[in-house]
Structures are given as C-alpha cells and as structure tokens.
Length: 115
Image 1 (tube, rainbow, N blue to C red):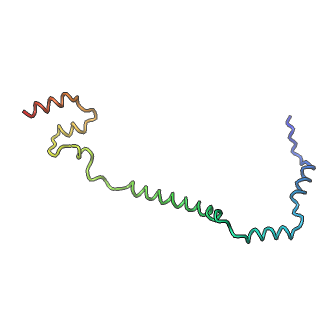
Image 2 (image 1 turned 90 degrees about the horizontal axis):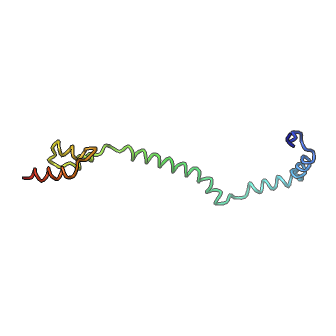
Image 3 (image 1 turned 90 degrees about the vertical axis):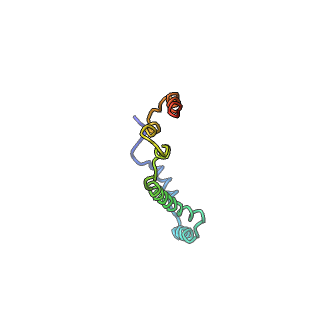
C-alpha cells in the first residue's frame, strides 16, 4: 500500500490559504497597476522580437535555398569537359568508364598508335 491519500490535507490547506490570501485588496491592485505601467526592459522587447526574427530568417533561408537549388541545367556535363575536342568513341568510353583500364595498356596503345 502507498502512503498517498487522495483526500485533502486540512493543515496544508490552511497553510496555503494563509500564504495566498491577498490581505489588502487595494494594495494588490496598486502593485499590479504599477507593474503594468512600468516600461518594458530592452532585453524583454528584444526577446519578443527574436522569435519573429528567427522565423523570418529561417523562411528567407529556405526560399534562398530553394531558388539556388533549382538553378538551370549546367551548360556542359563533366564528361564533355574531360573529353578531348576531337573525341572519338574510344576516348569518350575511356573517360566515362566506371572501371578505368590498366595504365600499361593505355600507355602501350598511346606509344604504338603514335608511330
């Protein structure tokens, strides 16, 4: 069994009522009105602006990212840049191959082909 009892505790209730009793209603109203009339601190004002400012900055960053990301197609593809100007099918296949050929085979082909 737990020591928790769901019924109200009379001693705790009396202590809370005594602590929370406003006492003088006019003094309480005067304190509230004085606090409301006091100008807000600069940090409090900036804190209220910060949420809206951060939200606006995130929205602007999202729009900028979208606009930059949807830029047009590149003028050339990387394979065209790497291929020689007088590229034949063999040289394009050499540049774009997923697995490049052995370097000795390429060197031999270049040496024997230049004679």
